[in-house]
Image (cartoon, rainbow, N blue to C red; front, side, top):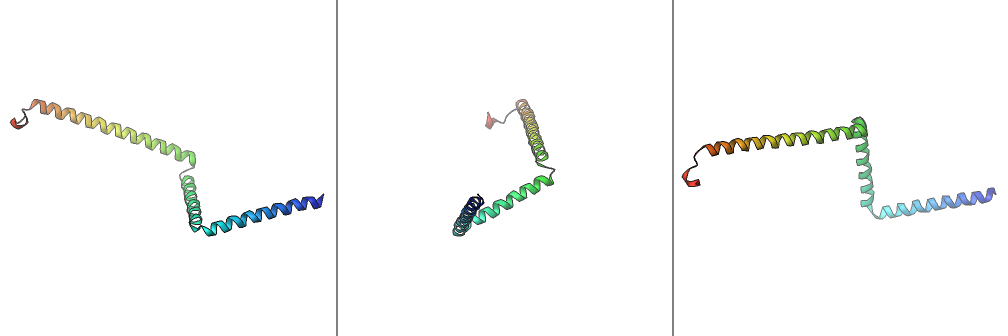
Length: 103
Protein backbone atom coordinates (compact mmCIF):
# COMPACT_ATOMS: atom_id res chain seq x y z
CA UNK A 1 0.00 0.00 0.00
CA UNK A 2 2.85 2.37 0.86
CA UNK A 3 4.42 1.81 -2.57
CA UNK A 4 1.15 2.63 -4.27
CA UNK A 5 0.88 5.85 -2.26
CA UNK A 6 4.45 6.78 -3.19
CA UNK A 7 3.67 6.10 -6.86
CA UNK A 8 0.74 8.53 -6.70
CA UNK A 9 2.91 11.11 -4.93
CA UNK A 10 5.63 10.71 -7.57
CA UNK A 11 3.07 11.08 -10.35
CA UNK A 12 1.68 14.23 -8.74
CA UNK A 13 5.18 15.65 -8.28
CA UNK A 14 6.04 14.91 -11.90
CA UNK A 15 2.79 16.45 -13.11
CA UNK A 16 3.39 19.61 -11.09
CA UNK A 17 7.00 19.83 -12.27
CA UNK A 18 5.88 19.35 -15.87
CA UNK A 19 3.20 22.05 -15.54
CA UNK A 20 5.70 24.44 -13.94
CA UNK A 21 8.27 23.84 -16.69
CA UNK A 22 5.64 24.27 -19.37
CA UNK A 23 4.41 27.55 -17.85
CA UNK A 24 7.98 28.78 -17.36
CA UNK A 25 8.99 27.97 -20.94
CA UNK A 26 5.83 29.60 -22.31
CA UNK A 27 6.42 32.74 -20.23
CA UNK A 28 10.02 32.94 -21.44
CA UNK A 29 8.69 32.99 -24.99
CA UNK A 30 6.44 35.99 -24.23
CA UNK A 31 8.33 38.62 -22.21
CA UNK A 32 5.39 41.05 -22.48
CA UNK A 33 3.33 38.61 -20.45
CA UNK A 34 5.90 38.66 -17.67
CA UNK A 35 5.93 42.45 -17.70
CA UNK A 36 2.12 42.56 -17.56
CA UNK A 37 2.08 40.20 -14.59
CA UNK A 38 4.70 42.23 -12.74
CA UNK A 39 2.85 45.49 -13.39
CA UNK A 40 -0.47 43.90 -12.39
CA UNK A 41 0.96 42.64 -9.11
CA UNK A 42 2.44 46.08 -8.48
CA UNK A 43 -0.87 47.84 -9.13
CA UNK A 44 -2.74 45.38 -6.94
CA UNK A 45 -0.19 45.87 -4.17
CA UNK A 46 -0.52 49.64 -4.42
CA UNK A 47 -4.33 49.45 -4.27
CA UNK A 48 -4.21 47.22 -1.20
CA UNK A 49 -1.70 49.56 0.46
CA UNK A 50 -3.82 52.64 -0.36
CA UNK A 51 -6.99 50.99 0.94
CA UNK A 52 -5.33 49.96 4.19
CA UNK A 53 -3.86 53.43 4.60
CA UNK A 54 -7.32 54.95 4.13
CA UNK A 55 -8.74 52.80 6.92
CA UNK A 56 -9.84 49.71 5.01
CA UNK A 57 -12.09 48.86 2.07
CA UNK A 58 -15.31 49.78 3.85
CA UNK A 59 -14.04 53.22 4.86
CA UNK A 60 -12.80 53.80 1.30
CA UNK A 61 -16.22 52.90 -0.11
CA UNK A 62 -18.01 55.22 2.34
CA UNK A 63 -15.66 58.10 1.51
CA UNK A 64 -16.11 57.58 -2.23
CA UNK A 65 -19.90 57.55 -1.86
CA UNK A 66 -19.83 60.70 0.25
CA UNK A 67 -17.63 62.50 -2.27
CA UNK A 68 -19.92 61.51 -5.14
CA UNK A 69 -22.95 62.81 -3.26
CA UNK A 70 -21.11 66.02 -2.39
CA UNK A 71 -20.21 66.54 -6.06
CA UNK A 72 -23.83 65.95 -7.08
CA UNK A 73 -25.05 68.50 -4.51
CA UNK A 74 -22.44 70.99 -5.67
CA UNK A 75 -23.51 70.57 -9.30
CA UNK A 76 -27.21 71.01 -8.42
CA UNK A 77 -26.35 74.15 -6.47
CA UNK A 78 -24.39 75.53 -9.43
CA UNK A 79 -27.24 74.82 -11.85
CA UNK A 80 -29.66 76.54 -9.48
CA UNK A 81 -27.47 79.65 -9.34
CA UNK A 82 -27.14 79.68 -13.14
CA UNK A 83 -30.94 79.45 -13.49
CA UNK A 84 -31.41 82.40 -11.12
CA UNK A 85 -28.83 84.51 -12.97
CA UNK A 86 -30.49 83.78 -16.31
CA UNK A 87 -33.92 84.76 -14.91
CA UNK A 88 -32.51 88.03 -13.57
CA UNK A 89 -30.86 88.88 -16.89
CA UNK A 90 -34.01 88.06 -18.87
CA UNK A 91 -36.09 90.24 -16.53
CA UNK A 92 -33.56 93.04 -16.84
CA UNK A 93 -33.48 92.80 -20.64
CA UNK A 94 -37.28 92.76 -20.90
CA UNK A 95 -37.43 95.97 -18.89
CA UNK A 96 -34.94 97.74 -21.15
CA UNK A 97 -35.53 98.90 -24.70
CA UNK A 98 -33.62 96.82 -27.18
CA UNK A 99 -31.52 98.73 -29.69
CA UNK A 100 -33.14 99.18 -33.10
CA UNK A 101 -30.76 96.76 -34.75
CA UNK A 102 -32.10 93.89 -32.60
CA UNK A 103 -35.81 94.62 -33.03
